[in-house]
Length: 326
Length: 276
Figure 1 (spheres, chains in turn brown, purple):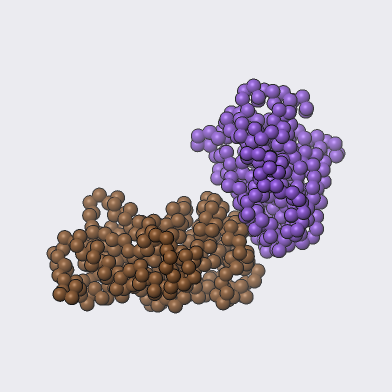
Figure 2 (cartoon, helix red, strand yellow):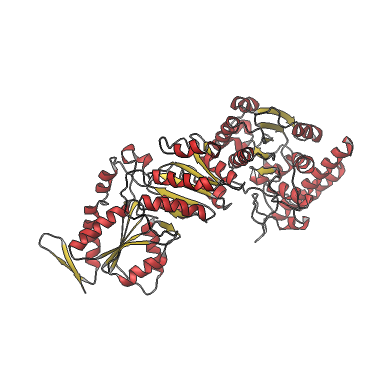
């Protein structure tokens, strides 16, 4: 995803002189296509995220579109107040980019697990929060946040995310992408969980359950209509995110559902429990540990969602659900 | 205009800023009168003589930028802006009031002439670095002035920006520290000592000048000498007295927070009148 981002940024910068990139001494073998092509529009602020963000705000207030770039929690939590005051309050054209959102740097330990960033960024005023689901979405999201003036947070995976979409994808900020149609339940994912959500849906299909899969790349503003349509048209909703279950996509969807007077739909948030994490390991290992692997997602749905359904779920002797009937 | 009348003009503007700040903080029952008084002379010279700004065109791209990083000194800057004609002096009456644009910490929204909103300390210098860098890269000749408080220099973010500016040769950037030696709870030296303060800035790569922050002639001469060194950012350590101009407020921690009562106000205004 990070290479899709930097490729898009270089292309944009070719025709838009306002675009600048300020990094916090990270991005080795990633940002060079930009820094070498546009040395006069590149700054390495050093290991100084507060300064990086304030500088970006100052440059933006002089007419530039400035991307800040670092990994995990460094461009968000370390300089949270600079984002709130200097960027959001001034409606400065600053786009905060974090690579490795979620557990992309899982083996590096707790400091590098970005598991509350969506919740925190989402609470800030006037910022758009985007977590693309694959490299195609990452590229289109990069273009979209430039087109839309004002603050944005782009939460990217690290590298090697499978490509889900074809190249003709229509992408609009704040508009969920329906990746797979289905009338039985809806799986709403954000960020890198899109692939797992699709795999889980394929497995459910083999069991006779048709899942709708929504890539909710924009967590703020949320596509309320897509959530409400899912509540009307399918029997249950589950959210899937590589993020704490508190405050992220699941909470955002829950807010919409709770405030909807007429809709009552079984609902489950799948994500990382709000506990101090002592676990380290590869992204895949940690996804397993937090039940965010395809098997983990299916098990969670069976144990927590199926019993709430007013529809009858037929369960095979082996424990797999084999169909959903009214 | 001869030198004497220029100085008289700056002193008169400083007195008007002080009068406004006293009346505003009294009316608002607000804190921070001491900090507004300590920087009044510097503001008067900046807005009266130095800053290339146009009240009729506050967003002029080539204007000099002034950022009050010690945002709690808002009253004095609002007063200076109103005196220059960015907005009506009558509007100063709304300071701190419900629904007013004039927030207790300096705010740009709806206030012509304010470049950046601050209030949480340690933010302004990085914003100023970004503006100065943008100016360099766009080959514009505007300058960026950032006023810091001494207590604010406890913030690590100040020193992040202090590393950045010399590295990028931002000689169009001017830091002015209102060094009144008193912070929120106590004197600076009893809280987190800054000395040797000028040496710290020099060691970071700044060209430093120490001045009497109440001597308008010295303030003006120093600001006219910018850049002190081609390729180095400028730091002016202005030695000031918190509460300057009102005898019973001078150099007292109390007046960081206390709002002037009606009696305090009339005594203070009388003193300013007698001085003028």
